[in-house]
Amino acid sequence: MKRVPSSLKKNLLGALVFSALAWNAGLAQAAPLAPVYELAQQQKPAMMDTMRDLVNIESGSGDLEGLAKIAGLIRDRLTQLGGKAELLDAPEIYRMGDTPAKIGQIVHAEFKGTGKRKIMLIAHMDTVYLRGMLKDQQYRVDGDKAYGLGIADDKQGIATILHTIAILQKIGFKGYDTLTVLINGDEEISSPGGRSLHTKLGAEQDAVFSYEGGGPQGQLRLATSGIAAAYLTVEGKSSHAGAAPEKGINALYELSHQLLQLRSLSQPERGLKLNWTVAQAGTNRNVIPASASAQADARALKMSDFEQLQAQLQEGVKKQLIPDAKVHLTFEMRRPPLETNAASRAVSAYGKKIYEELDLPMTVVEVASGGGTDAAFAGLKSKAAVIEGMGLTGYGAHSNDAEYVLLNSIVPRLYLSTRLIMDFAQGKVE
Image 1 (tube, one colour):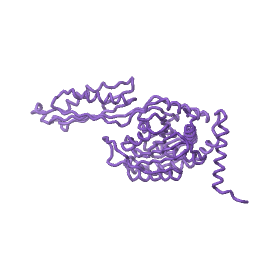
Image 2 (image 1 turned 30 degrees about the horizontal axis):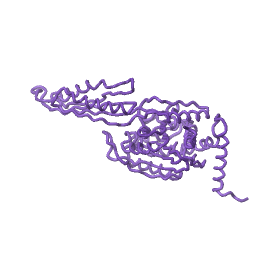
Image 3 (image 1 turned 180 degrees about the vertical axis):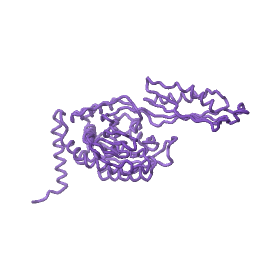
Image 4 (image 1 turned 90 degrees about the horizontal axis):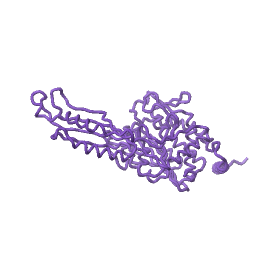
C-alpha cells in the first residue's frame, strides 16, 4: 500500500478543518467548534509539560542568568512555531527607586498572515522569587492542580500563548495581518524596560490580549488601577537637642508638617487614593534630625487623575513650616491605569458567547480593582481592544508554598484564546 506523504496529510487536515469551520459558521453557536475544541484537548498534556519546563527555570526579575535561559527557550519555541522571533534589549529604561542596574531581554515574535487585523499577545516571564527557592516549590501535579514557582503569575500565560499558536498552526489559520508576541522579564518590578515597547507596539494593534491569570472565576478584565509612588525628602541641620536645639533645622518637624497638609488629596469616590505608608527620620534621641523622608502609595483609574495629583503635590510642598528646610518631592509612575473602551467591551462580550458554547459562565469586569498590569502600558496610547485575564484560573501568586493553577481551565482557555484570535481577525467581532 502506497504511503501518503506527510505534506499531503497536513494539507488534507487543513482542508478538513476549514470545511468543518465553514459548516459550523452557518449554524447557531450553541456548541463548540469541534476542530478547535478537539485540538485544545489534544494540547493539554503538552501544555502541562511546557508549564513544567518554564517553572523549572528560576527567573526572578533580578536573575539575569535565569531570565536569559527562559527567554532563549521561549524564543526557540516561537521560532519552531513559525514565527520570526528575537531577543531585544530594552529600548529605554524608566528608572525608579527599585530599578536594577540591568534589565533582562524581551522576547519579541511576529507571525505574518494574509488578513487585515493586527493582534498582540502579551505575558511576562519574571517572578518575585529569589534564586534557590525552587527547591521549596518544584513543579508537581496534585489532582486537578499544578503547583510551581511562578506558575500562576505568569508562566501559565506564556504556555497558553505558545499552545494557542500551536493550535492556529495545526489548523493552518493565518487570517490576521500580524500576530505579535511580546514577553518581558521585568513586569514584577513595574516594567521599567518593557513599558515603552508595550506602548509603542500596543498603539499599532487592533486588539491586545494579556495572559495574566483569569482569577478564581476565570474573569476577563477591561480595567485595572494605575499605581504611582511619591517620595518626600527633607534636608535640615543637626544640632544638640538639649544644649542648642535652636541652632538646628528639624527635618522631622518639616516632614510632619508636609504629611499633615498632604494627607487629604485622596478622592475615593473617583478611585484616586494617596496614602503615606513609610517614614524615617533621625539617628539619635538627643540630636535634632538633619534628614527625614516618607513614601506614599497612589492609585488612580484615570491618567488625568495622576497628572492632577502630581501637580497638587508639587504645589503643596511649597508651603513650608520651616523656611530654611529643603523639601524635595519625586512622583514616580509605576503603572498607568487601564481604561476600558467600546472596542474592549465588544470583544469581551464576544468572548462571553464563546464560553457559552462550552456551557461555562464568564464574568467581564469593567471596574478596576487591585494592582495594574502590562496591559495598561499596551493600552496607554492605543484605541485597540485590550483584554486582561486571558490566562488560566490560578491561586497563590507570590506565595512560596501554594502557587498553583487549575488544570481543568486549560482546555476552555485555549479554546477561548484561539477562537477570539480567529474570529476577531476575520472581522466577526466589531
